[in-house]
Length: 451
Image (cartoon, rainbow, N blue to C red; front, side, top):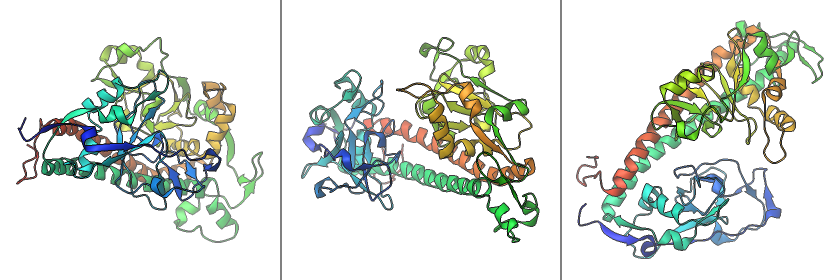
């Protein structure tokens, strides 16, 4: 280690300001300009995630309005492993949103004249040593808490300011690329959902043909697949010759199935390895896809033993509990992985024309609300194969589904590719971060390249 690296406590360089106790009577789930930063906005490993909005419509104290680039830290964690406690995040520049400094979140403020770069601090407060310090000094059994004093007692070696800036630039560039890929994926997902809604919720092509006009933005061959009239159903008018069905009936009709993942007695925590075949758990699902960050893995013997739970391309893995409706569509990357404890496996069958259609249908608010109403358990909603089998699904003409799948698969493949690139860049960032923060890897001033 270079002699230019000096020992500091965080308290020598910063203070951590407590958030404001905004009044719950003004909380809203309806989007408004002001949004509270909560512990749920912190990703595992650090960094900011938009998550579910918690909006505020009351009067806002000016000194609790956050700015782009502010570093915040989570002071409370509800998870058993304190997954996000103490981790830092940068406030993003989000169109139409002003982020508010809420209680249980600390704002990192650099002291005047302190020889530290704020961006470097952001990554320091995502490092392994810092994380260990915060968790080991936390209070509370069920809900974990930390405090500004405990955070500020963390001791570490600080490089010169020019090297801090270089480290922050390297890691920040990776995070910027990850954020851009996530934005692109969100745009592509919105396009897919908009097309699903147009074809299968609003029935725009059918209504256009009913009025004797060509469906907008659709070629003649595709338009010819849609009827020009509606039939009555228990849920209202649906296109002629389309029918209402259930997820279970679709699976049975196409020689598919809905089954549970392996129970806890079949797969123990001690079975999990750092290397091996990934096991998909509820926490690994994000936006109809699998994120591999910190995913559990098992060895070959467990894969052989649990072969009936191995995933195939086109499967849908559903969370059995908690966030009802959370699921992931399995792609070629995940073939051969295992469906894990706490999940249900939906296999539509080889003759079903579009599993993307099923995934988008199950992702809709009305489907999630139906599952929530029928879930069992008062405290924690739970699903089982019977409930999931009974969820209503509209069954369009197979030729329409095949046309939809052909178009949407191009978007879906791009989304999957984006997720794979995000996973790759995330792994690179998480590999570099501890080495750069500790000085194991250095960035020469004159070259700006990692040696």
